[in-house]
Length: 177
Image (cartoon, rainbow, N blue to C red; front, top):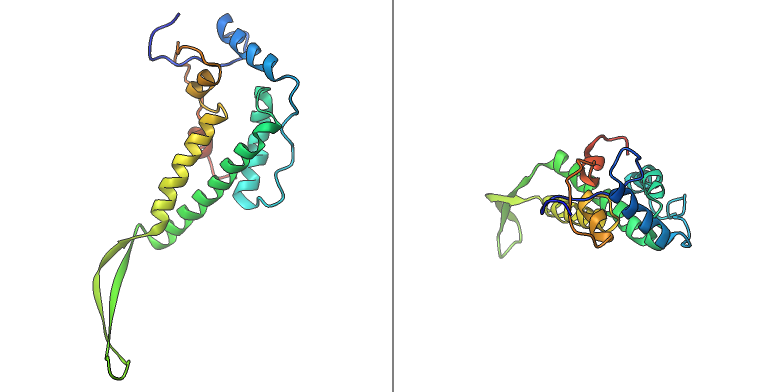
């Protein structure tokens, strides 16, 4: 056993340790009879969500343990990514806060008397960004897209931090999708 706090990885790379390769093979063997994850994204996914499915598919299929049974989880990951990107675009366009005005109306005529500045309000897109980011992290972990979550899927004791690229790093590496 390794040191506490270190994260094991699942791998087929012959340069990695034998016990890491064995863990990976055990999981692949347990899921070998399951149907492969579909190549095409669900029809209702569009834009960033569709592109993420297409870009993640080779990575997910390469694991050999993400199967069609996981399609809804992949779909939710893609949908949350879409919403996260839209929220971020709104924040870029409208800022983190918005000015709030109070309109004073004549109670007799209904005419606007004045608009008074009453402060700032948080852009609702910032909360959406927070929420979707947390969901993306959780869904990524469910799919084993981080070293720690791959270890948890296998129900193994953490051993070593391998420096693998996490889902967050994959998502942040560019704007190609």
